[in-house]
Amino acid sequence: MLDVNEHNGSYPPAAQLAARDNFVAATAVKLEQLQAIVARVEREVDETRALYSELSEKAEQNHRFYAFQQNEKRMKELRLDELLRSCKEIKQRLDRIEGTDRPVVNFSETTFESVNKRITELAEKQNRIERAAHAVRMNALLLLGGILAALVAIFFRLV
Image 1 (cartoon, rainbow, N blue to C red):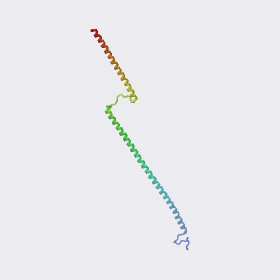
Image 2 (cartoon, rainbow, N blue to C red):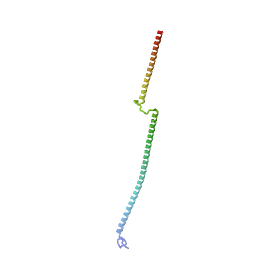
Image 3 (cartoon, rainbow, N blue to C red):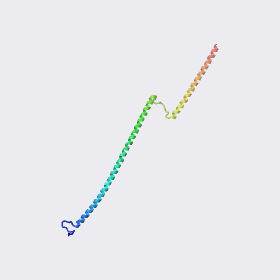
Image 4 (cartoon, rainbow, N blue to C red):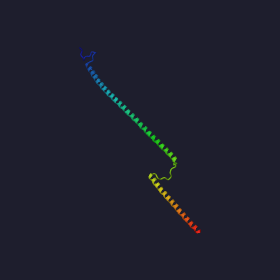
């Protein structure tokens, strides 16, 4: 039987075997640690990919929503512009029909109250003018009656 420590060329010495066994064991442990690290990194990469796809999806949703909002805003602005244009067109037609294309000169009343007050003042002036006209007619009738009476009196004196 051969001694394990003897070296005859076919068997390595025991110290070399122990060192090799220790190296193989340490390498196996390191490989297992590396495999664990690789597995953990792969899980983290998978989680990161899932998170990235989720964030990409949310960003795409936000982009679509923003585009929708911009489209809605543009549509509202277009509708308002169209409404404003049609109102201006209707006003121009009405002005042409009424003949009020030229601006009103010296129209200082800008509220309903001031317009109402001005109308009341003008109505009072119109009433005064009508009363004065009536009084002038009555005075003219009285004068005519007096002249007629004077003519009748002169006629009867002459006759």
